Amino acid sequence: MSSTIAPDKLLTVVQLIPAMHAGGAERSALEISRALVQAGHRSVVISAGGRLVAQLQAEGGEHITLDIGRKSLLTLLRLGKLRRVLRQLRPDIVHARSRLPAWLGWWAMKGLSPRPHFITTVHGLNSPSRYSAILLRGERVVAVSQTLRDYVLSHYRWLEPGRVRVIPRGIDPEAFPYGHRADDGWKTSFFSEYPSLMGAPLLTLPARGTRLKGHHDAIELVADLKGRGIDTRLLLLGVIEPGREAYVAELNELIRARGVGAQVVLTPQRDDVRDIYAVSTLILQLSNQPESFGRTVVEALSLCRPVLGYAHGGVGELLAELYPAGRVPPGDRERLAERAAELLRVAPPIPLLHSYRLADMQQNTLALYREVAG
Image 1 (cartoon, rainbow, N blue to C red):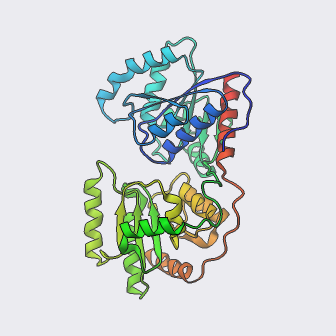
Image 2: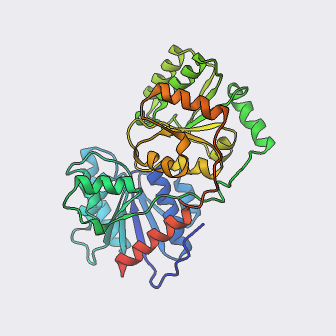
Image 3: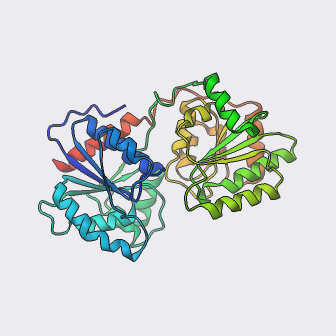
């Protein structure tokens, strides 16, 4: 779905982001690029590249490869090139989605005439600091949840509330249709690739390979359920990433130590997430730190799949509104196992989702662009 706003003026919008591999900020950049192109605007993303670039370009967006997100002093050497690129593009809006790219964009725009409008999105609950504060310097600051808006306003008292807009991320209900079932051909192929996932209820934790996502808790959950006589399988979807080899080795050691090697599978990112959700009995969201949103919660519930997650941050906000039965106190392993057992036995019904739609996010973001660009 795309924005239906008819443009009075065609805009050039540049989005700044570290890379286009995977993650909520990256997908939001891709989705806004698609909406811009479909509305007739010019969309340019500047990043170090990644697996989503091909889709970005196929949908009409442009990509300029420039590593503006690596935390290194060498990154400052790219400031001059970024300024030259912006001078050539003459964008109406520069939209920064991460702290270091935002700093580089802020400096690169100095001296440009006309100076682009500067918009920022706060995607995470970053530690309050002068470094993080750059994401509050936009003419408009987008927060992806009410939790996040409350967070930044409480930690940055100088921030005018009127500049902070809540635009939740959204999903396309056509991409995650209610009651979707994977076809037999896909199931045969998938379980042939991962035969150990057959034979018991499947728990899926979709999350990139970073410690805060709760992979350790998911492994412990499978072990705790096993101790209660409940056989399950666990898919850690998307945990295998370049540069995360040591973390994956750590997870494999925990799997071995807890005696659940036959029950747990680790995979890279996959493009068949919808079908994986559909064959899963429970979707897990166990981030050990509060997150700003929780896209996987909305995706799963849109498909009518139960979600079990820690009740803090944006995930807690979503579960309280959409699926209260899936809430568990953060870090409470005993309650997590109890609630998992309850949901595996009988999961409460899931109503059809009428909020958190991709089209709403796209329309509201494009309206914000129009607002600042006059």
